[in-house]
Length: 149
Length: 419
Ligand SMILES: Cc1ncc(COP(=O)(O)O)c(C=O)c1O
Image (cartoon, rainbow over all chains, first blue to last red):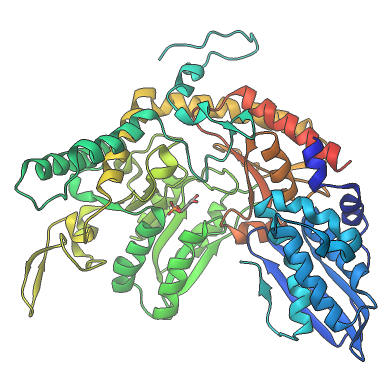
């Protein structure tokens, strides 16, 4: 059970049950959809980018606990960040869930560190990164749906 | 077969001794996540008995040669083993002749073969192919490709809320434009056993041929293609305790005879000049190139294995286990079984309110219980039940009540984590 708790940490379960920023943004100026064909997870990420700053970011969709919590915590973390900062966190998060080395480079990702447990579950990495890839696509204003396959 | 020891008095007389059966499968000696394996993903693929593994190994160690071409000893021996498997399979499904047993890569290739040969020569603009709403993608997409090319269309027989094939609606769909009916014998996502005898009878009243996808049937129920009178039957070796990469297309001889070849190459010809090629006789006309010889031989061993236990015994054992599993799953609140047809085999597909199947799968895996989660290559079925995915436990001949108990125990853990 203890090792399962590394993956399903309380914070993750909490965000799964009560996802934050779970809504559409009516006046969004960036938006992208993500889809994981393996498990049927779907997500739409909305942003309002003002002078290079993420004034608002939100999402809707259906997914497993890992993907929902990841999306929820991503929106909390990125709100108020600049576009450039968001890109850096995207990169760090990606390495956090795939890379076994860890280290001080992850110092500034704060609560997102709870996702490090995902490393031990290679098939779940896509769940954790779906929201992030979708966010990245929105930043790049890619119109098409991103798929984690 | 010997009866079970019957320690548990509530248990009906077992059809065979499962514990000795389990010893035939070396995988059960391998620990997974530090525990002995509880394998409930048999609809995806089954584990292999030692006799199948040995047959494949024997070919590579002692008989390896190409078939149908060498005059030398080994080639003759390999050819004999391979063709011997074909006769075992003929007997297993009671085909009328060896010509009707075509080796392919699996169910997917068998369906594509029929779509690309029979389909392309019989389906034209405005024609219709009837399938059901519970098909695996491999019995949908080949027909879509054909229909796109020919400007034909697919008609879909609906299913009920319990996951049953709707016979009346099916009868209505059959018409003068129907060129083929292609339906699954047993659904991989729901476990429904379809009324195939009636499906075939109704189609034949209108002279429409029927293809049965038996990928989830051959390992669970006895099949007699002549009694069924199906025109084509497709199945995969790896789901019936045989090797991957080998499967069978059964087709009635008169139909196969008039169909053009599927692929061109060696073995499928009898005479070639640059102007004209004479095709080989059946079934070789459809077996271009060097086949999966080891796989074919292994599949023969799998048939021997299944017959040594007996399909009727397997059906009885799995049926008892499925009933037990259904009752056990019902004890969990917020769990809904998807697919509750009256006639079912092997499959227990379910969802738990508020918990995604993927999370269920990961936690069960930690408990050493292997199930499948996802859409099971049957997205239309998922759409019908308004769920992106289900968790699916599927039973095989070696599963026990202890496996079901491990599943239920694991599901209680899941609920604990998500409480
Ligand atoms: C009902 C059904 N049809 C077809 C297939 C495809 O079989 P294969 O992948 O072996 O070609 C499967 C396997 O998942 C199946 O369950």
